[in-house]
Length: 294
Image 1: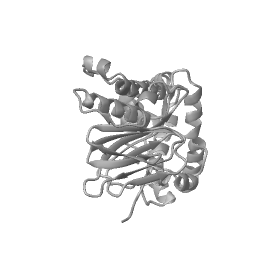
Image 2: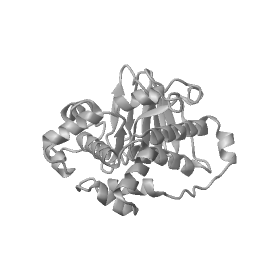
Image 3: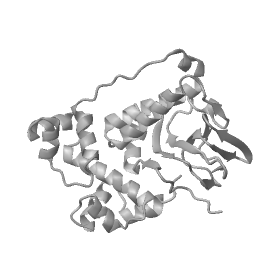
Image 4: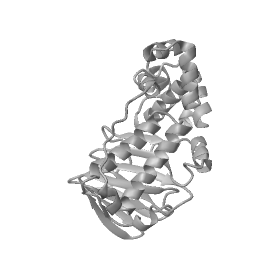
């Protein structure tokens, strides 16, 4: 049997760079609980991970469908549909999908200065088959999509707040079930322009192209974008390209030069230089370090 840590069809994953984690650990809104890794593995057949010394972060696994097993310090737990489990940091553990009915899981790694929200609900099966199970998954998607949109301070802070809300929904179940709210958020020009960037990561779009799509002049849009995100539009666009390249390095077999040309860089040297500026390591080092992250 070939046990694997990742590489599942349709999987999604984001690894937050160490430089960004330094910001998160010092920011007042994020330092108590923040994401370091997040993803989704559908129909994860032969999924297996073992850490004899534990992980540096707490790990939350939410089983959407199927079944799997978690062993925490020699005690085994069975995880099935609409159940979750938090593995505390630094605790020896392993987890694996059942062969006949492999799980589909949402997962994330998180850490922070405060353990008060998750200590009481860690190390045990959490049954989440209630009237707001969909809302929890929506919270997960909000975290993922905000981080996918880039690592600017607003996205990081909002993601941490959503994480704390998610953890609170596990600890304070009665309170969470009392209130049912509907999301009616209207997208404004900045999120819409970021979506346009994400849809054109393999193209060579310019500031003029993005501004035209948003309906502004280049100068006005550039100033507005910088005010809202703390990044220039092209710096943000490059950051999204680097984020996409991280996914390709971790989950594809594309060569580094193929990734460079696929994402519209002039040559592999230009790509490697841009990658190192954001991630603080080379693409090759990133692939070696994170090829089996989860």
